[in-house]
Every structure is written in structure tokens, then in C-alpha cells.
Length: 265
Image (cartoon, rainbow, N blue to C red; front, top):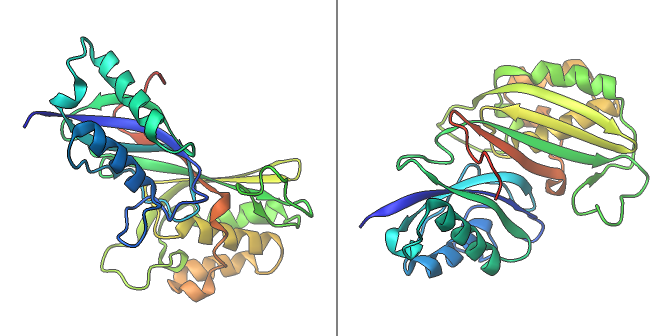
């Protein structure tokens, strides 16, 4: 059966979802919602591949996903652009309000959103005021304290580069490599808000949230900068910091060798 490989850029509020990945014990996953709508459009099962499996409660500003649709789903539109607009509009009409498709385009047949990703960028948001903003409380970690940014930056510099991040993962056992490369960690302040940006070639289960929790502990003088280095070298999860709450984390962007979504429709 002839088909097209379609790539979409989407955003979602992960508050009420049990993560990206479809699971047998819940209907509340982003992948599951997308597949349900696309299967109706295609008249048969459709499997959606995401660039990353965001955890329960984690949000996305720029998730990338791809799926294959039979030619019959396109209804003989005269142009590829019209086909893509139709698919995007169809998804947005039937998806819940907390999932939005920003753009759709045809990808090369063998494109895979996860396997072809070169890097991912995550943003973590923290509120340092004594109480979280009422309208942003679902999207920021309400720390309620002011950490030392310079100490956090010194601790972060230890983690930049290629390392074995086993100590910064919630994985119990794995035969796969836990070596990853973090190309940058930027920490910015805007009033009472902190934003931590992490870019790397891949991230382990809970890795970003454990890094953030560790940096926060350093900034609050609950651990030394040297202890961050020791935790990294130990490969021992118990020596790294707490896992920061999911609600402050956003998948911001995914980079590929090819330029994608040059215009958001």
C-alpha cells in the first residue's frame, strides 16, 4: 500500500497526561491521543513516533513526531501544501485543547523523528518567590527560595561535555550505554523566575530533572560544587540530587541534520 511519511511539530500541556508513550494501563498519553485521531482519518491503525518520550506531567513547546498515512487519507488534494494543511487542521479539530499541532510537512520515506534527532533542548522553569504565580503554578517549580546563581553555574560547568550520566538517571538497570553529551547548560534569571536551558545529544530517564535538582541543591548551599563532580564520577544515583518536579520541564526544540518546518502554517 502506498503511503506518505508525515512529520509534525506540536506542543502540549503535559499536566493531565501520563507521559508521551502509549501504555496499556492508561488512555491518558499524548501518543495515544494522536494515534486515535489519525487512525480515524486513515481508516486503520496509525503508529506515531515521537522524538522523545516525555514523562508524566512534562510539557512540550516543540515536540517532533512522524507517522505514515495511506494515500487514500489525502483525498486527492491538488497540492502537497493543501494536504499538509488539511492534516494539521484535522488533528487540531479532534485533539484535546491541551495538544496543538503547529505545522505538518511531508518527510522523506525513511525519516524517523527519534532516530534521526541530533540534539534536544529542554527548558526548566523555577519560581523563587515565596509563592508561585497563580496562573503559572502548573508550569513552574515553586522553589520559594533564592539560590546562588554563580554557584549553580559553576556546578553546571562540571556536567557539560561527554560523560557517563548513570548517577543522573532513574534507570534501575540497563545494558545500554549511559554516556551522553551535554553541549550547554545556561542558567538565567528574570525577576523571581529562573530558567535553566539544557542542550544535548540525548537524555536518560529523568536525567534533566535530576540535574536540575542537583544544581538547585548546590545553589542553596545544601551540597558543594565538588560533590557534583563526585556524584558524576561515582555513577551512583544516591549521590546526585533530588528529582525536580515534572511540571517545570519543557521539551523546547529538536534539531536534525536537515532543515525542517521552515514555515509554521
